[in-house]
Length: 231
Image (tube, rainbow, N blue to C red; front, side, top):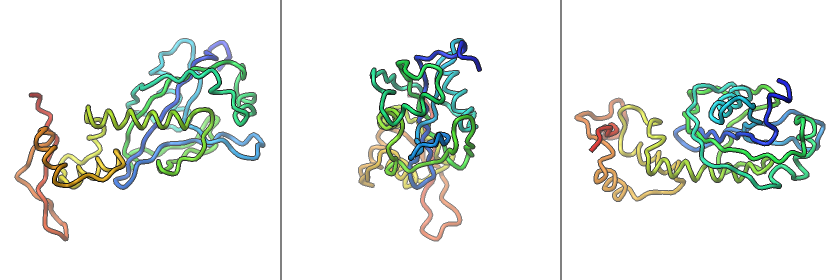
């Protein structure tokens, strides 16, 4: 890929959240070793090509760095601090991998929420390693990527609450306990069982089925499905 094909001032960064039924994780890469004392950890991201849209760039970059494809990415915010790529810890990497290491770069953030068991990331390009990191254990990242993760998480929670983004992570038929657990993991807070169920029923988020759990050691609970009927 020639320098003429690359826009040196615009990039995309992907905040891919992974759900494993117990906790929320974020996908990180480890940049290839440049002989530095500490390897840089970062979000999957890179510069945009001159002839591609931002959405195309986000999908391409994620695929090139992690081999993940078929993920629906949602644009959520632009990050344009003039000093966002001028930290001392980032200089060596920029000088080794960028044609214009001193260029100001504005990045556009994208987020997605996926089931971790459905995707197997593999490192490639300038990523030495790609891995899932539990949200509460995210270390210091390259550039301003910690801020991008924080803002991405806020947008995920807003979208989850207002648009039911992420409800597809539930099985087709689920219990109210499973629905509550999904909320608690993504929102990162405990919810009162009684109040949660009253809210769910009042907002008609689910439809009760004439079915109960099977093969469980405890008393079988009623099953529900998402209410997809528009009022």
